[in-house]
Image 1 (cartoon, rainbow, N blue to C red):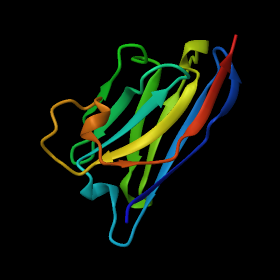
Image 2 (cartoon, rainbow, N blue to C red):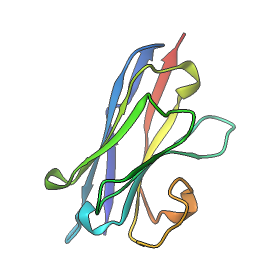
Image 3 (cartoon, rainbow, N blue to C red):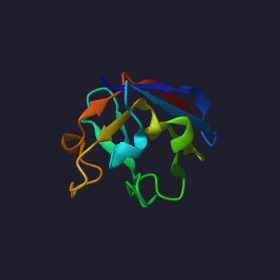
Length: 129
């Protein structure tokens, strides 16, 4: 059983920063065995959208246009942890943020939620103006 647990959410003023963490666990689980890891978010009344993703084997990344230059996804395989550093936060970044893992190495849409198999419970990020 794969478990993903997010942390690091909170309330911050516009222009501030937060770092989200996603701790992965399981009997034989390692993010190294997940081809892709990603961060998604969902605001009330809106669809879940992909924010950032990383190919765990080589470290290549992909970002939504709305967060490019502000957010950075990274991984620490030794700690089985995924991170999302969020800088220059805006009120429109307010959402529940989810960590996800995709074992399939052949996905083509890195920021598409349907490509991901395992999900965490989410951590709330609120940005006030």
